[in-house]
Image (cartoon, rainbow, N blue to C red; front, side, top):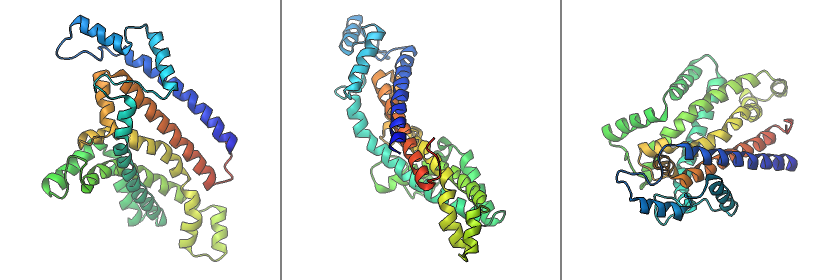
Length: 305
């Protein structure tokens, strides 16, 4: 296991290096610059700003300097938020995005696994058709459609919850549902397919032959192996819930990291974009590694390929 983790860690460092390199040069290919705006700056002021941030140096020199700072844990200084570093913005805004992602994942796991198990328990009956139809509906409704629909019904028509902000506990309900229902739909279908496949496995028949009840065989012996595809999906899903929440954060006016990422991309705020991309990439790699370790724990026969 230790060799497996070390090998994956080295691979992760290589992937992060390639992502940083590609992102660094790609953001420079975007037309415009960080100091372009509605009001054009005097040329002297522009040169002073570029000199202050090191943008007057050749691109390879800027790249080498950025990598050097990165090795010291310094993600650079944002151009748009005076007095703030990228590290400070990520540290300040990440808890909001993380809380939203955690709430959405909780909803996705409870609804997704519960619906999938229920659907596979009595296939081709009403307990199968209804949750799977809702799951298909959830897959077909992206967050930028589902979010406004929930706002219209529960916020503007029924007046049950606030539709904007992140101040009160009830402000979390609609954003978490918008993000969580989308992933719950995928988890439900994965769970159903996997549980149907393992119903006829030898270890399931052996458990029934021992006189165990069908419910115990199904939930105790079947669910552990049946969740393997779900665990594989959770790695990228967890990273997607945190990094992909910028649409939901924009819809519900949530002050999370996703909104800063979108605004940084629009403003050509190079270091902010680089910092967010690097941070999100590290999250995806970390969650995938945790997912692989959990898969081995759930099924020790799985080889550490």
